[in-house]
Length: 310
Image (cartoon, rainbow, N blue to C red; front, side):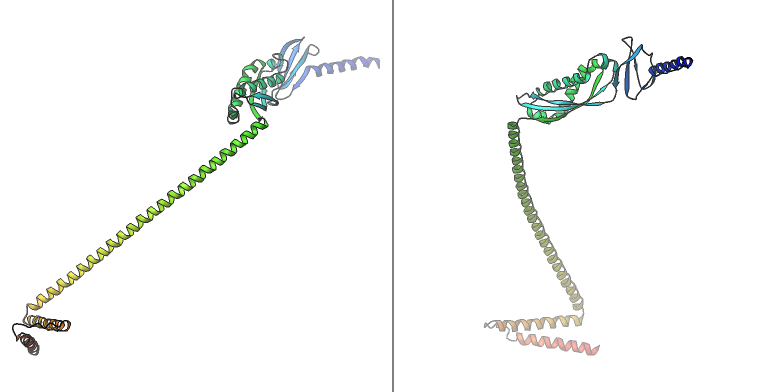
């Protein structure tokens, strides 16, 4: 048994040495190796080897992006309003060597730098601008932190202001101001609505008047066109009648018919005058009435004769 004790101890010692010599570095991690108290190497993800009892892992640095809460603090704006402000900071280690040896605690340092940068940037803005230009404020704080943290191997990826809390008196004044602004906008919108309604009503009346005038004009035009057409038709009919009378008067029978028609109209006219007036029209020729009747009878006889001859 004593003979086996030494080999077993040797094997155990070898295994211990091997276990100390082989390292598995996780993903997104960096191991800072010191040899005899002095920086030797930065080991990244994967299997790595060191010399046991001579090399040691001095720092384990995460390369992941991490979020750090920035505690709330008091700050004074350009117009001397005291505010309480906090935020959240997103940082990432870009150079593990600098993050390990450039500063004792880079997270604490970044928090302090973020707070001082917030106070400095808020002091350049009025109260109203702190709410309106939050994105611009975030960008300026990031720029200020990155300028100082470059020596630490740390980069600020994002910064977000979470809450800006003015004093109660300021909040009350802001509420009154916003209420007054809302009432002002409501009054403006109401007056604009009434103004637009009046304009629309006037436009409607104007269009109605124009349409009525156009309708009356169209009616007058149609009426005039109708009267003109009627006159044209009457004139055409009269012209046609005169043409037919002229053609008929060219014959003997036609002349007789014309004379008969004229005699008939003359008798009818004299009868009408006699009924409508107490004045008796005496012709110089006392035989005029008889002459007219005789002419009419002779025309009738001539027409009957020509008709019997035909």
